[in-house]
Image 1 (tube, rainbow, N blue to C red):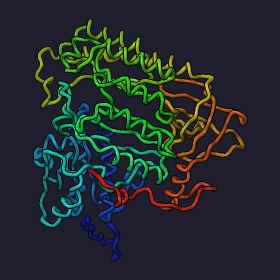
Image 2 (cartoon, one colour):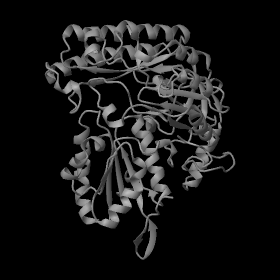
Image 3 (cartoon, helix red, strand yellow):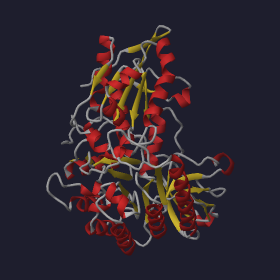
Image 4 (cartoon, helix red, strand yellow):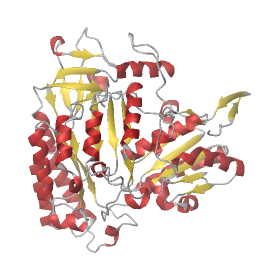
Length: 509
């Protein structure tokens, strides 16, 4: 049982201490932050959002990334801004966890001695205890483990979305890409048993979710630890048997381990979405070799051909690094050629920068910043053109959109809501006059009437607009009511909270 937090005295009234988790990085960090929030609420803290209240919480947790450029500068800059407040409020606590904490360890306390707790990627479940110990001992607590303590999915959770959820199927990575520090920070791959994963998904669905995303550093190598190379395809098919689960996604696979049985499972399982994120990194075989990416451009393009043969309308996204050490203009042209041939709907493009602790940081022929920048601009211009052309092909199609809570930047002017299609394209859509408005989690069927590089637009007439109210929308209404919000009229009956941990009867490994 987690130790309960003491109350805060304000004007003689005892109030629960508050917390905020600030997340930097990838989907795995977002997933871990949901666990951290669940742990803190289980310990008696209440969430406070500085953006909404204008006040910093009693406990601020930074869940960090060590992969993105300038991750350390971003962290220490944020910590520096909290230092004066910490001096004014000595009972306030600051904790730093995640990949950068795993890497920097006591360096964080040397650079920011006002930090109370530093914890790593392998022991996020220790956060409440470390906070209590730091408060009791009146000193900073540092705890970094070298291997996984408790699988994060066994921990209490406060989900950020009631209609969609992340489900971790593995942690760690067995690859040795020269630009990546993740294996040294997250450890070797460890796989969860299929029954545990499916039980968690079923619990999410029972709580209102209709979409899940399976997470792993390399999802398609899932099963290697327990000796089943076909386990990931089997897991996708098993997801297809879960009643009420409408959308299944996964990220990220590795091209070297992507097999035909996974493509078959995607094509033959109706609730596995026609969308695939397939990291390219480079279109040059020489650069791929230097990166220790164990595939070449021909294999990569062959995978895309097979996917599109089985799933013609699949939207494929990717990651690309520009300016890897030793990349020549010829190498870069190879990347442009593969991007042109691949027709990605979206590409996440990054300029290479040194990551201390990675083999690539010590490679010769590090490229000048100006060269990397110029290539980056050419690549993004190409991909923006392709994305716009691919989105233009969607105009005239009728799509089903899962409505999200977030709207576009111009929603105040356009009065459009937003959501995602089955292939994960972003759609900004209007509700015809007199038609019923959807809730987050509901689904609308609308025609695509316009397109840009990064989104689609739909302005349907009344007869073109169809709304399907869902269990997920009901769950959103319940969550609003429980947080003193105002539910949408016509919501379903009151049910269980969305911010609880997994049921105790479920077994985890």
